[in-house]
Length: 206
Image 1 (cartoon, rainbow, N blue to C red):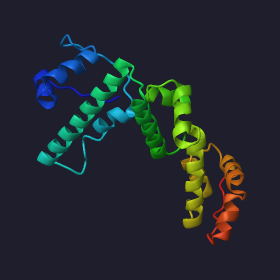
Image 2: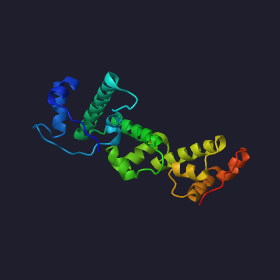
Image 3: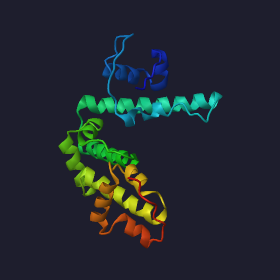
Image 4: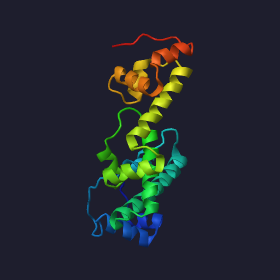
């Protein structure tokens, strides 16, 4: 969990009185003091996770943290506006689909379920998947699987990363699943490709 505590007058100085009032109302915090626990998508709360830069100290650390808090409050206000209005116009839908793509490309390892993605981006699962396919030509998991396998091909040609480590990074529970998927896409096994590229084939650890 990540949390931000601030005085009302400090919040008003940061974002302005009307915006502060709207934010508190959307969070059901119009009566102070009070506490409300809500699930907020990770991409909205990420700036708070990044606020305490370990490489900075003193005034620079304070300035950096304030910038991240402002980024968080701006994202939170926009998220609450969209959820509160139920706004799923074409422009909003396109924004959420693009955000979903960026989120997927930033992940390593096991992928979230479609239901989890739909919850994160505040859209019905079927609508999110259909809109994604319309925009990018593939369903969500076909898109990210293709992307990850293409990444794997480059890694096999340009590095000697062990096959097991590569398959784990791409989210496969077992290296054999990765080999099967890779061979289906490219018509040859990962080991065969690596041998052709002249890379030493490291022994696979079962």
